[in-house]
Length: 72
Image (cartoon, rainbow, N blue to C red; front, top):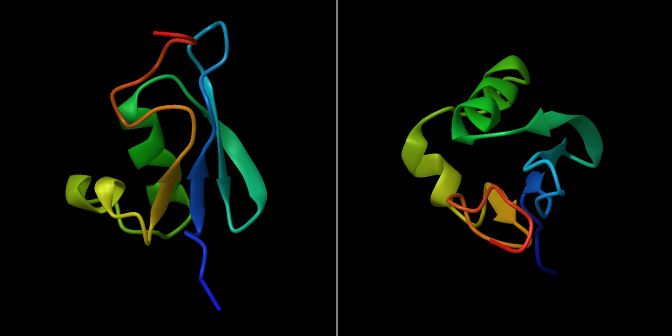
């Protein structure tokens, strides 16, 4: 059985915001990488930058950690 990443950063919307869910619960909207780090910190998950690229921790949908505009 494949284990899913506990954090999902959803595709960017028209305003550049990306919804973030942790363990299936929507916890906020990130407009840049620092927002993702803050949401992880608030919810007791590692906030190290290298952890954001770990597919076992974070699943980036609709673009990677550098994508913050819809269709960009």
